[in-house]
Length: 143
Image (tube, rainbow, N blue to C red; front, side, top):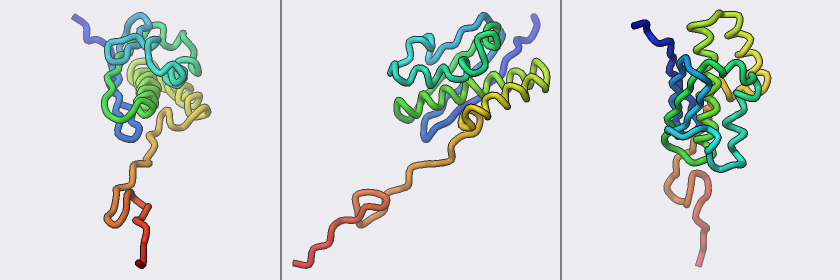
């Protein structure tokens, strides 16, 4: 039995992590077992579709991508999903197709949005004592 051609990559945003498993197939993209078309909220569905829309359907026609996403909020999960999809197709092309097609995909994705391939380093600042949050302090009263 021949070894299946597959790559596994992850996308992150804040505390949300999406792990994408990309292999040869017939163009399915599933998120937590559901088709990507059912992704909620509907407003952010196009954000998750962006890598497909930028590179075109023909690049994804012979690939199956399965994504598991955990942690974070709704928006952070969507951004993690889009990063995982973009990274998975670039990794697949790097491993099983050729270097020039990988560089072309990478260039297209970087020209559109760098966060598709490079994760955003911003994190939540920890809360400190003497206030409600990271920077806000309790009011002073002198009476």
